[in-house]
Amino acid sequence: MASDDTFKALVVEKNDNELVASLKQLTVADLPDEDVLIQVDYSTLNYKEGLGFANRNKIFRIFPIVPGVDLAGTVVESKSDEFKPGDKVILNGWSVGERYWGGYAQMARIKSDFLIRLPKGMDTKKSMYIGTAGYTAMLMVMTLEEAGITPDSGPILVTGATGGVGGNAVAILDKLGYEVTALTRSQHPSIHEYLKKIGAKEIACGEEWSKPPAPLENQKWAGAVDNVGSIVLARILAEMKYGGCVAACGLAAGYDLPTTVMPFILRGVSLRGVDSVSCPISRRRAAWERLVTDITDGALETINTVISLEEVPHYAKELLAGNITGHIVVDVNA
Ligand SMILES: NC(=O)c1ccc[n+]([C@@H]2O[C@H](COP(=O)([O-])OP(=O)(O)OC[C@H]3O[C@@H](n4cnc5c(N)ncnc54)[C@H](OP(=O)(O)O)[C@@H]3O)[C@@H](O)[C@H]2O)c1
Image 1 (spheres, rainbow, N blue to C red):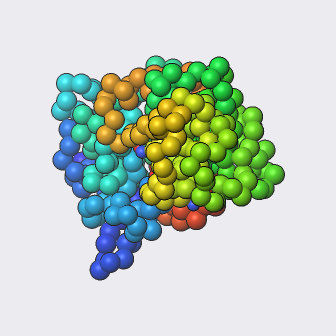
Image 2 (cartoon, rainbow, N blue to C red):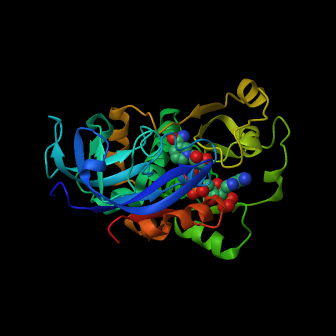
């Protein structure tokens, strides 16, 4: 690409306290000075960007910023020995799209330390159908496995199952032979059908999920993947079977956790936190290698909707309002 060639980018600026997002034509000279220049194919839209565009939780830390916590594309120039032009790469997290410019552009300059190579058997489109959502879901499943939870242990509950992380977790657990119950607040039959299509055997949506639990409830779950936090996570803990494990990554219902020590000290339940943003590179690679096989293309097709850069601010609002089912991929070249 010639230095004065322009490309499309979605740029967020701060005017007084208002955030203004607009599509701009940039040149590579406008990009931050990092060691790998990438031609971007796809990015994703997540709960975090929903918060960012709504000017909540101080997600965007620098202005102007090109958001987008994920990207997949091809290396065009590299000052790093690790990568050369033509390499296909993935980026997730590391505060990219928050403290560094991210994936909502046709070109990006990224620190080589943040990149991993696209695993063999996966193309850039599939990698962003998965995105941070699927990679986090894989980390959650690995966390349950490390706690000794197997398909024979019993049912697994996935919360926020209509969302990106939850949907991927349902599909991965189903592919691996676990019996999955998907939790949703929705009573709508089409939502329940969607959850069954991506791999849920049962749906949980009772009104008890919006009420505080007793310290211990009937034992139901061998494992759980929680994206929601707050009283939902408190109820999961109270409903865990003896020796069960909960992997928790999210706060869609809130960051509080009004629980007691009873599930831990009387049932040996464990609660393990999962972080995808600063996850060490070797564990990232392990998760991405497994994602080549541990989720079906059919489930990914059902979970994903593809949008353009222009559509990102609108979909970010809809996602935060709870009006999106599944996961959103951003085709930056559409
Ligand atoms: N720790 C990490 O590294 C990491 C990585 C990725 C994501 N996350 C977090 O994981 C969570 C899920 O992310 P996502 O991108 O999958 O979001 P998403 O697509 O918006 O999905 C969130 C789901 O949570 C449910 N939900 C929303 N508000 C709720 C509420 N008040 N009470 C109960 N359920 C509620 C919704 O399901 P129903 O409407 O069907 O109930 C929704 O589908 C977010 O909190 C995100 O910040 C953390």
